[in-house]
Length: 404
Image 1 (cartoon, rainbow, N blue to C red):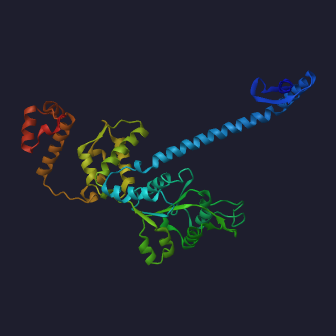
Image 2: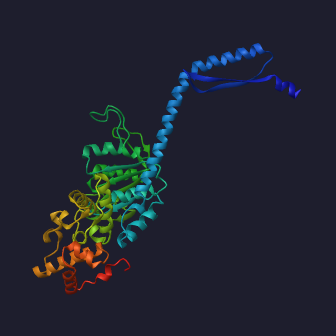
Image 3: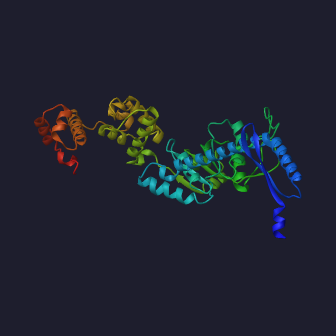
């Protein structure tokens, strides 16, 4: 009986074609009593396949585009996560290792509000990005808002959104940045520039996780982690009544102070090398090293513009370099004057000449790995003259040999 039932079951399958392209198939299984009914069902399926072919094509196109967008989004998130992870914040000074990296690692595992403090140009946004992309919100939006770049009249609408007709020009309802960052992180840069009215609404969002759009009355729930940054002294602003005290304590859950570049010692050299490579790649130039006098000038400067100023200085030096080396004369005048660098001459002319001579000889010995003959050729003096000057200056060529 089971075998007889199987013999009466047939499977019919026909292609879904558009022109000469096969987009898929449509089929079915059914019990038949005779061949005539089987042929009719096959013709019926063929007619259905012909009718749905254009719809199937549109579906496939939309699905392919959707998959491609999802792939691109995944690649972009992975690239951003790689770019802004703490390991990619350049610097190994004690100030960065103890005061910044350690806090990033601890706070990124929580949803606590973070307040990043530091001078302009130290890289506060980079720290905020590292916190977001190291957290469990990395796959969600990371939205940036510069409080100083937006007029006070627009800041409230941009942050919290508005309803249609809320003000002149509000032709449609619009989500604010808080709603756009739902599930992710909102970075508020230059926080000290917010007006008192916006500060009050921000406090409510931080306390209740709800907001109301401009011109609306319906509360909107949001799940947003807030990271704020400022170069202002908020404690003084609170004392002067220019910043809400309750908002300050609500934001100051985990403060992270990014040290200025002048306090980061050897990080200056690491950052300079990084910016040289970055500028060379962008300009398609080749700069292989920074000369010793130029490095000394970089280390002696007090960097009021911090990392941002250093990047600009290196970019300029790469442009001006003619021999794959950044020399002291490729650096801007602000690094070469006693007044701008906060240094004094300190030495007389003879001592200065002695120092310059010593630097040039050391540079040549480094280049030739301690080979006196080759160093003499580079300096365009005889081997005997170079030996006498090294003896007078107390320079030992053996220190620069490859084996050393």
